[in-house]
View 1 (cartoon, rainbow, N blue to C red):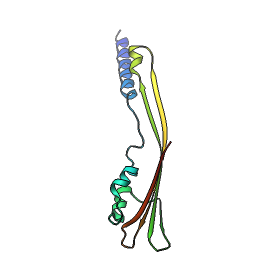
View 2: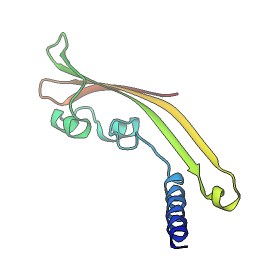
View 3: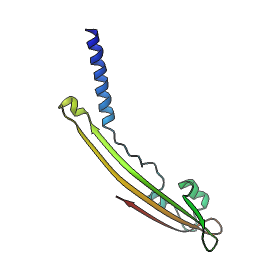
Length: 130
C-alpha cells in the first residue's frame, strides 16, 4: 500500500515537471549584441571610438588595414535560432499532447572603417533572416 503511494507521488512530480519544462520557449540567440538595432543605435561616424566598438561587440572576426593605412574591422555572426514549445498539460487534462518547433537562421555582417585617430569613419551592415 505504501509502495503504491510512493510510486503515485513520484509519478505526480514527474508529470508536474514535464508541465513546467514543456511550457517554456527556448531562444538561443537572444543575447547576441551584434544586431542591426544595436549597430544603428550605437555606431556614429566621427564619434564612436575603437574602444567603444570593442566594448559593444567584442573583438572582430577580421581586422585588416586598407590602402590608406586605416584599420577595417569585420564582424560576422551566424546563428540558428530554435524555438520549441511543448504543452504537456494536455496529457493530464485531455489525454493528448501538442508540440511546436520552429527553426530560423540569422546572419549579420558589419564592416567598420576607422580613421587615423581610431574613430569610426564609415560602417556598413547587412542582416538577413531565413
